[in-house]
Image (cartoon, rainbow, N blue to C red; front, side, top):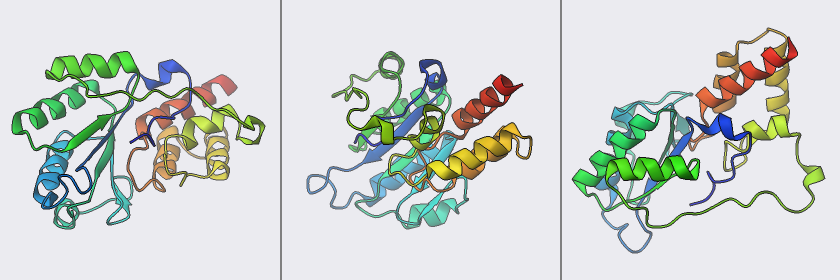
Length: 211
């Protein structure tokens, strides 16, 4: 899974940004995986992710969902997807998943040294690592860097550059707080990998730089 890999922005803004994805391997251990995936999701939600989503119900934590309804609708091929803004919570989730040995694939995205450190603390050895090599091609067609910091937090491109620009402007002008703006931006990302905490920090930084 690499759709959380291409987040854009200054390195210091990723200190507390840890997208999390878990799912069975299709046609390998997916048959009958629903109870195991429900348990993975329970463990993750118990540790209070900043966001969590479901492609099955088309909801995320920002929009709001009923936990039991989400768990009941989890199917054999349903992924568990969300984002944490606290490394200690990620460590705790991984430790519990290791202890329960549910056999589901787990991907944690973040700065490589931080993710490797989290794995060591959880007593895990990463199976593999994907690295983003940057953006190539007609980069002049992309939105400005300040907007890319937000749009790339939604790996399925559900967050439009136009909405981001409007929210950035509203925060700069004082019509929205950074937290209010971050919540609006998080809503289109059904995966739940959009990090509201990071978004609010970026909006706050831009507002302060203007002043």
